[in-house]
Structure formats: C-alpha cells, structure tokens
Image 1 (cartoon, rainbow, N blue to C red):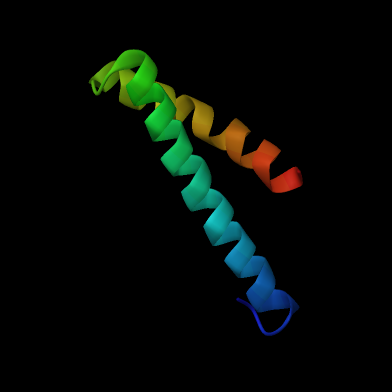
Image 2 (cartoon, rainbow, N blue to C red):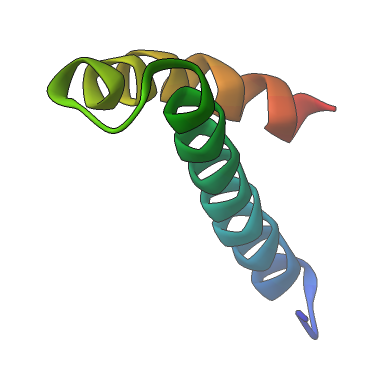
Length: 56
C-alpha cells in the first residue's frame, strides 16, 4: 500500500494490470483452451479491459 499519492497510484496500476491479465487468461482458457488463438484473444482484449477496470 502506498504511503503517498504517487505510491498509491503506482500500486493501483500494478494491481489493476495483474488482475485484468489474470482474469483475461482465465476466461480465455475456459472458452478457447490454451492455444495460440487463445493467446491472441488475451492480447487483443487486454488494453480495453484494463482501461475499463482502471476507470471504474
């Protein structure tokens, strides 16, 4: 946890990025299985999902 606003912001970015990545991988594996196509879906959907999660 951050002790000032800058540290809190960096902590928020890191946590949001890792949680979105983990949830994206999990959901794509459930739907498509672990394959090159699944990895492409994770990469394609990561940035929009990250932006939505960060702004909520």
